[in-house]
Structure formats: C-alpha cells, structure tokens
Amino acid sequence: MDLGLKGKRAIVTGASRGIGRCCALALAREGARVCVTA
Image (cartoon, rainbow, N blue to C red; front, side):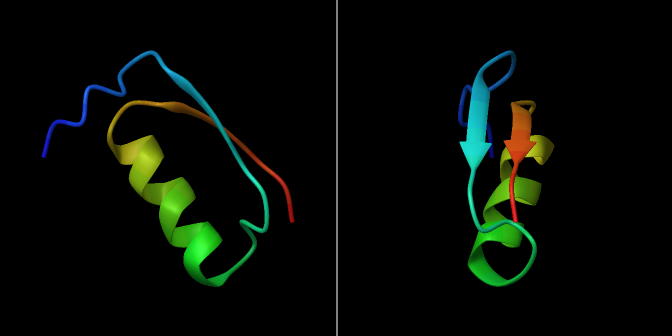
C-alpha cells in the first residue's frame, strides 16, 4: 500500500512494544523517517 509517506517524518511515542511498535514499523516500511521513544 502506498500511503505517500516517503520522505515524511514521524514521531512515535510508546514505540517499545504493542501498537506503538507496529505503527513505527509500518511507517518505516512506507518510507517515512521515524523517530521513536519508549
């Protein structure tokens, strides 16, 4: 799926596990530059 996120930036809080982790991985797969925090 192409969500048009290539080159975009995202901050994901609570990304150490669960939904936050899944969201961070999905954003990265779509080409976003992801900053994660626990």
